[in-house]
Length: 155
DNA sequence: GCCAACGTTGGC
DNA sequence: GCCAACGTTGGC
Image (cartoon, rainbow, N blue to C red; front, top):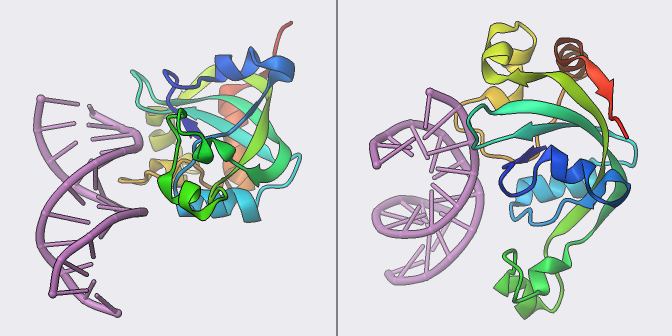
């Protein structure tokens, strides 16, 4: 899952109550359908920082609540307000809850991914890939954690 | 700041 | 249903 650290970083997630936050604000159908149809409680998540000095996978998380209505779409004061949802009378969008699991001791940046046989195939490495949620294969998952060395979060 | 690659919108 | 115009994302 991608996030701009200026908007919501892995540290922000760790500092949230119970290290858990809702993944609000997804306004793309593919990403929405992915959350709605694929995500199960307990599924592993790699947390990726985008649009920053060094875009990298920075931590491991997991899905801690199944998809439910993202009602920020109905809140006119929210940056994620969606007029069409308002007109419909219900939110078109969903979100899941995500809980931080581990830090990566070594952040896995794009050079590391591009240099790695397994990781250069990751969806997030494809040119023009803007989807904020993309699937990761078991081999890619293991490789990221091996390179990054997952480490329990302190405190 | 540039620009490629998308997704969305809206006129027809 | 087509497609041009437009807006956004995001690496570099």
